[in-house]
Image 1 (cartoon, rainbow, N blue to C red):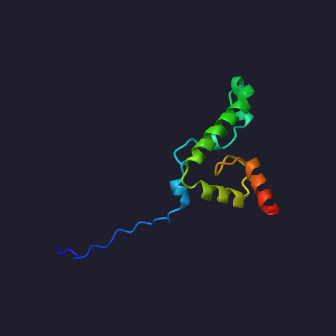
Image 2 (tube, rainbow, N blue to C red):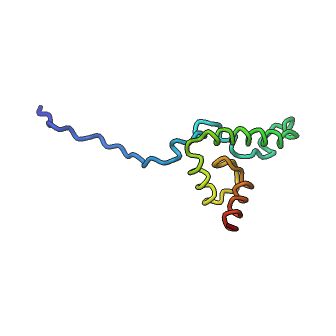
Image 3 (cartoon, helix red, strand yellow):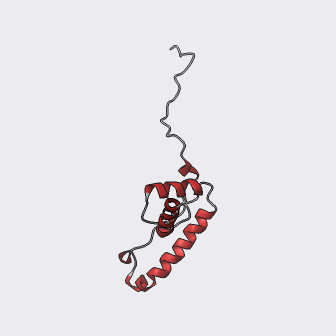
Length: 105
């Protein structure tokens, strides 16, 4: 049996590297970044919904603060006009405010 002197390379389809590959939120629980709805909580926890969402938002912002791609994420969220969650270290209301500021400038 003869062997080919140059075996064919193994081809893998690689996706292009994206800024999201370096995002600090990737290993985190995604629920930190998006507000919970009332029906997602056990009845005994529903009175604490505001507090739980506020705590989650603070933790998501802390993760975002140390993220190496925070600027790219923020830009993407603003361009996407995302209405939910913490992205780029800003919640939806803070992103809308930034957009209004940029339009006024």
